[in-house]
Amino acid sequence: MDPQDAEVIGGYEMKFMDRVKRNLAWSGVMMAAVLGVSAAGGSVVWGAARTAVQADVATAAGTVQVVAPTERGTLTCTADKTNVNITGAVSGAVSDPAVYDNYWYLFEMQPYEDELGARTDYAAWWTKGDAISCSLPLGFGTSSDKLYSKFVLAVFDGSKYHAISEPTYITNPEVLAKNTGEYKKPSTKKGLLLDGGMTSDAMELGVKHTTINIAFHHLLGEGIDYQYDGKTYHFNKGVVAEYDRVVEYMSNKDLMVTAIILNGWNDNTPQLFLPGVTKNSKAYYYSFNGSTAEGVETIKAIASFLAERYSGTQGKGKISNWIIGNEINNNEIWNYAGQKDLNTYVREYMKAFRVFYTAIKSVNSNDRLFFSTDFNWTDPEASQVKYGARNVIDAFGAVVKAGGDISWNLSYHPYPDPLVEPEFWNDGENGRAIDSVDTRILNFNNLHILTDYLQRQELRAPDGTVRHVILSEQGFTSQSATRGNVEKIQAAAMAYAYYIADSNPYIDAIIMNRQVDNIDETNTSVALGLWRCDMSTPGVVKATMRKPVWTVFRVIDRKDSLEYTEFAKEIIGIEKWSDVIPNFRWKKYEK
Image (tube, rainbow, N blue to C red; front, side, top):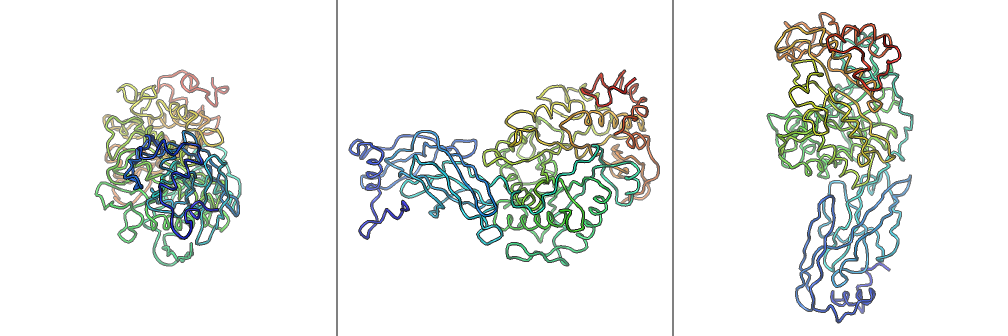
């Protein structure tokens, strides 16, 4: 019998004190000992923080001040083709039976919901002490689809349900994927951000990885209709055709394609931005909105469209890696969400990330999803819009694990400090990029700290392995702010950085920025390209001359690269690469 059905006896609802008495009898506590006495204190955990929740409960004896439940619940939620399978456990003392009834209740919540509020529509219930286990219809692809839902345990005080567990998501959406093709690992880690008109040059360079920016604010439009969850979404045919062309070409050349999913401002898609966020002159991109129903539905539809189109099964090419947002520890510029403390900001980002994760993995089971940070590892100037990368990684890892761990991965940008000088090996001299887990800057000078940190047990993937790391954006200037042309030093820096990444088993790829210098960047002494550009054609990228770094980059993933990088040792001040690079890949070939 449903516990709430039992509340109606003889045609009228039992009074709450009568229910209390009944529960006390069930629990073996003497009723007379508690009548008219306030309930004992306690605490409930929702996430990392303990929040004291109080309610005034009307009883026949007057008003009793009630504190939060004392039980703490955990849930595990997985799916199969037809059901959501839920198990759970409860620890801690049973909540005061003078206040709470004798049951645990399971609620389904939408991914954008934060609280149960006045809801009473629980999905399942158990008598306290019984094993928590049930299966609910998944309803995949129907109006009652639970794939994106989260679930929470609660107790009832006679007027309101109180959560006693973290809302927990389904952790294995990949079980529903039609595309189960293996993740194809390229033969080397060498990657490059390509300029559209120079694909033949990229092939000559032997590039194995590349990135493509996919901007949500350009995607929606007219020309392609896509049905999802009973709605029709309209995509810009011209924009999508260009993505098709690029992804298909790169896939056909056996490049591993990583998509960076960005949310630029568009007045026509307000649902993609968090509530209260307005256009900001400092922000290039904005945080995705996983906090409203319309925001979640739109993200689901666009992510599913992209995952299907670039699954490698529709003749449009294959995207294997998906980076959600850019440098999310910089809320102010690259992932604007308005002023928020770290934990609030990360929770908001996590909601959207989960939607992307579920949408993509339920289509392509072996695709990988990432979030990215810049090189500001510990930021002494952290604020409501900027956060240290380490704190973001810790917070994201904790909040994801609490709600059901998934296989998130990290995209990192270890530029030199400052960007206007290429010699990253000297970056410790200013005390910023030092060999310490508390370093201010984490770049190639101390890169091992990143992968050492990710080996911590609390940050490992659900299967116990270390999370995948892609170095998806870095480069070294050939135009020093203080010395002018330093092209040979740029080539030395690239070689050293590549060898460091290549010799680190936890780094999957190192993708250089850029193929050709950017005029605006070059004017600020940030000339990162393998080619010089025509500085007389603003707004047009026109390659003019290969720099020395081009030749080194072409061979850098081969053992004979040692011949081409011999010059760099004198510049860096070393005798052997293996003296400064642990587990140097080509050590046995060194002279």
